[in-house]
Amino acid sequence: MAATTDQIETTAHSRQDPLDGTAIRADFPVLNGPTGDRPRLVFLDSAASSQKPQVVIDALTDYYERYNANIHRGVYQISELATERFEEARRKVARFLNARSPRECIFVRNATEALNLVAQSWGRANIAAGDLIVFSTMEHHSNIVPWQILAEEKGASLGHIRIDAAGRLDQEHFDELLAREPKLVAVTHVSNSLGTVNPLKEMIARAHAAGAIVVIDGAQSAPHLAIDVQDLDCDFLAISGHKMCGPMGAGVLYGKRSLLDAMPPFLGGGSMIRKVELERSTWADVPAKFEAGTPAVGDAIALGVAIDYLTDLGMDRIWEHEREIVAYALNRLREIPNVTIFGPQEAGERSGVVSFAVGEVHPHDVAAILDEGNVAVRAGHHCTQPLMRALDVVATTRASFYLYNDREDVDRLIEGIYRVNGVFGDTTSRTGTGGPCREKWDARTFEDDAP
Ligand SMILES: Cc1ncc(COP(=O)(O)O)c(C=O)c1O
Image (cartoon, rainbow, N blue to C red):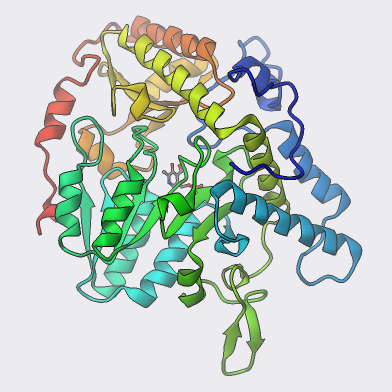
């Protein structure tokens, strides 16, 4: 991955060593803050939003304290500085994703907005009645609902790639859907509920061969692994800065320049125009065409600093570090007979997300008991209701690991699960590798899959 010229120093984390979760936690105030009579906070909900290192918090404060000003229009010094830093952040994003040009990187609020931008702009201009839009059963609602809205408006139809018993996309079913020549395929790089890492490069090539454009939801991959949009050859990719050590409020839509140039605006207003007359207007070039109104300037700049932080540690090292923790977590979870692990069973096939059930105990009860030990996990449907239906559960408990976690955090999670069993008794209606739940999942078919 290309290094930035103004990377921050993280000398505490020598590049020769594997990452050390304890040393990294020292960079994150929330993970070091006082906890009263509770033990150290073990934060296992980074898939929802990661914690922020001090350098990112400082970058935000620095912007508001020293050069808070609107951008692209001021002729005074602090506005020029803010503009320069904002555009520098865009260049950092472009290098991080290996985009051909910073112009291909549009600042939005989050992955949800990025996906809606594609649906409302590219989609409205290119999808017609009878066209097919394909997405997968494991998508986050943000990569489902925008396509449903578009399909409803245009009279298009939807196809859903099934998942197999191991929580992977069913590639044969994908080929069946491709044979129907969809106009657009939208798929997540990494599942936020199962942790599955999808084989994107070959899926994108097959989708292109079938004539579709491909939209990738990178919300759960960009924080954890090196992404190269040119190598993947995706047409669009959506990311959320707040899941990758950046502040809330800054996400990015990557899009191929030729597609972005041809697309109509998403939102109209200031900053996105070339000329406005009373009857009609013309549009600025990308990326400005898609950045109407005042952007989240400080957030974008701080996202650039988060990218420096991750890049300096090394995305490959972050990925390896998470592999090691997840392998350990899967082994320790398997020690507990009534724990069901959802998704791929091997650490090599998944990201740092582990969804599980503890017998018949409701995930909210599991999470509440874990919280008593100051272990923060998520319980619920994780904005993947269709996937929960495919798993035949209403919710799961999800532990998601990131660069600041380590084996000790996994041990604290396991201690908490033993406490759950202490409270509820050892409910053993499910077994560690799936049991009845997965059989139902195998048998399940989806009405909408019918050609
Ligand atoms: C896979 C995936 N896609 C999209 C999103 C939406 O992200 P945001 O809420 O930042 O728009 C999430 C958030 O959890 C996610 O996990």
